[in-house]
Image (cartoon, rainbow, N blue to C red; front, side):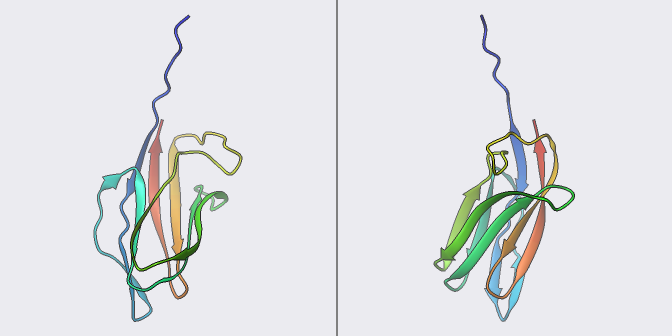
Length: 108
């Protein structure tokens, strides 16, 4: 019996953030399978994924990050390890002083 392999492609936007003067700026964008957060000072950072209706799907990071670049990968699953359907999702990045949201398009 052949086992079928399910292909999952997650198209996300690389979000590079600069946290200075209480502002977040998107500096660069490209298709990738991870979310990259770049911060200029060490601080608390929360990275979450929400569905189109802003229901929480998954928390990718909730804790302290040192200054620099940090990548988080969303595997397309929810809090209970269920595979999410293709569609538009939102990645929300919160720092101690700023919040930014970026669309994620997942194609299965």
